[in-house]
Image (cartoon, rainbow, N blue to C red; front, side, top):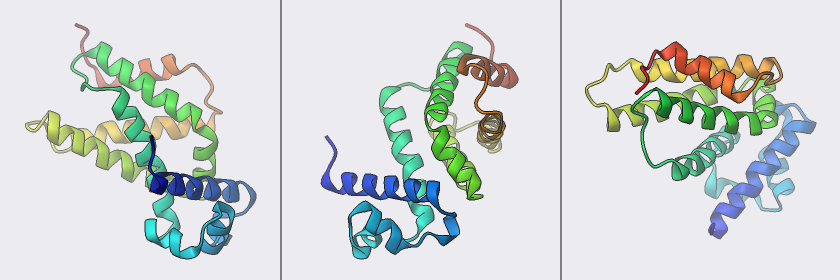
Length: 173
């Protein structure tokens, strides 16, 4: 069960995306977001310093749900394929939000988020691995996601996931 604070953040996220659907991102102010969310400006600033923080929260909240469902780190090709399918399924379900993010030229926030999460995972799970490998994974996910989005998320999630896993060359069990 989510706390009242999490519900408030959710309302703010929803308000921002609804406004982004109607107006250019640059023209949306904190006052607009707060009014649409049904909260005051002070409440907005209690949780977020700037509009971009709302989008970053959106990414981290969705990732928390994803990580809760998956309690292991990939060790073989089949594991990576399952994770890739989950990532691209979640992306596909959120494609409308990602279209708005891309239209606002904020996709760099997604790349920054992927870089951070991949680096954290590799530091925990693969401490002796190259410092650059997490950035390779994050960059591939980001670029494939953005290209897939531009093409209307055509093709199946399984096809995209298999292409990703084939590109990282993980052997089967």
